[in-house]
Length: 358
Image 1 (cartoon, helix red, strand yellow):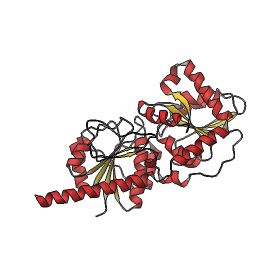
Image 2 (image 1 turned 180 degrees about the vertical axis):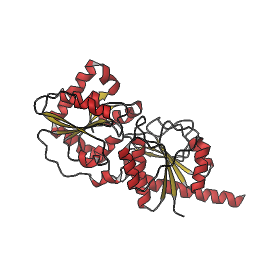
Image 3 (image 1 turned 60 degrees about the horizontal axis):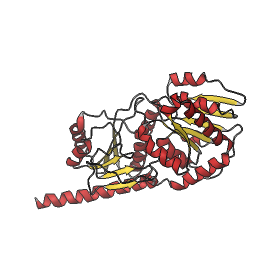
Image 4 (image 1 turned 120 degrees about the vertical axis):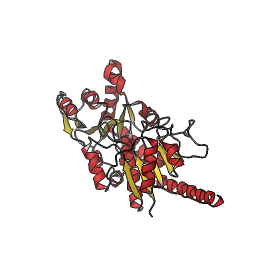
């Protein structure tokens, strides 16, 4: 029987799809190696993500109630391991799966997700430190930092190393997650316009209401806002842009891999760890925190200044993106799956020995 992994994650408009996207990167690696993959999750309301699942031959299984229900499903599937990616999951899920004989990988962002017991913890943030908490076993394996960033096939296929000729006016991708659950685009795109610089903004509108708001933004001379629907071809689009203004989530690491200069907005609390590390490492420019950009005029002025700097200094953006692209080699998912297989093999051997002793 091939190695079988259950991916437990959700993707829907109110939650976003970042957790699901990084699990799909793991699925790409597992499927390439001939492993079985079952996605257990609530995946609704995001058509382009559902296309991604269909393209991989994955049909989401509705999550059963509670940790015991998931453990029973995993046993029924003959699963060897489970990946947990979601801070809203019952904190007893990991330990219940371990007790059912599965090897568990928990994907975390700093303290977010660390309430789960697991055999392996993955924190792919720049400068990530050892995961800690009362549920974390002392002998757990910690996979930390950018050596373990998970990239889908589409990202790796469009990684660019050659310098791209700057467009005139510069093309700026405005992207705030697969669903823009926080409604960031209507807040941030007008700030790009307020720079007063010539610019062609390609703004991804995750919902009709966002598209309407973006279409109503007044532009100046040599400025254009092109409103786009969410697309699975975002990597191809990003690779044609001079700058990406984006939320500080999964998209950040993908842009680093693609070599696209980035300016970041922190839209949720769980993004603060990655936002601070990337900005502090001079890998991307800071635009600000969304909650302040909504209501604080001084924060908005600071954001306009930062965006103007990004447009006025393309060489600086290229230096930052080159530095960032050198930090990610695109083999993170290989390392993570290698580690998962090794830990699962050790756990299986230990279980065999224990049963023989009994």
